[in-house]
Length: 341
Image 1: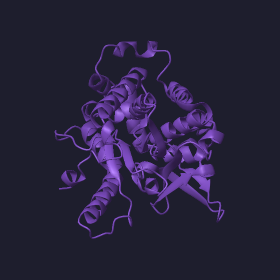
Image 2: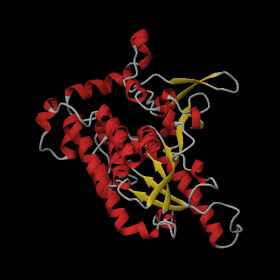
Image 3: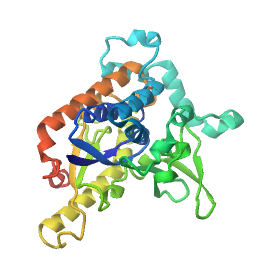
């Protein structure tokens, strides 16, 4: 049995790519997920996966993920989106970006605070998250689950686990402050209420919780925010999109740089073997597809795009398993030295 940890990035509706990754991993009876760190959409995917595994094994996890993305819009009445049938993902992204409703909503979110709604404010993700089986999500069995959110006051990360994980925890992890009001969670030790924003600002996702001695060495990052774009962003939409990607990749890159530094010290004998965790880093991604998409497709869960993302996630995982399944437990398949050279 090959055991792995999963690091699940946030990225709004692009988290449907991770749905496809998890769906494909469930086809591999000799691959077991031991730990999951998730942020935003990654937190939703991780919670659905874990609760399903605890209550119904692999098929339970698959059904939970299908149900989650059904609620998010992957399965539903497609008549509203008929005019986009046959379009490529890049064309869908452009169509949404340049549509009047999206342009108006985008401008409105920059001028009007989510607090302006007063008592009429409702977080649209709450019914989606309330549907989770939190007994399974918080269970001691199944993969260990860690969910990341950002403390508004200090700007520091907080990682929730076990019975700390609630509807509010997951909503906090997915709280974009231009769209949602901060999610307030009481500190059980002090009783002080702390406001939280999206975990992507400080850990997208946090990797360090997966370095525990009881978890495997293999860390598979499901990357849904392109690390590189070859073309210079020049339009307002392109610039905003790239700023979003850089912001939400920065914390991940910092942790990968630290892993690379420790790996070099272990290799040259500066650090004694066994004193620090050996981390074998792998990555599943489809940068070609993700560079065709944008902030618009992150914020608008168009059913046909979600279905395409799921398919892409399955395909990317299939390629990863064909190329690197034998490397699990043996060596890293991401060249961090080259990445940071």
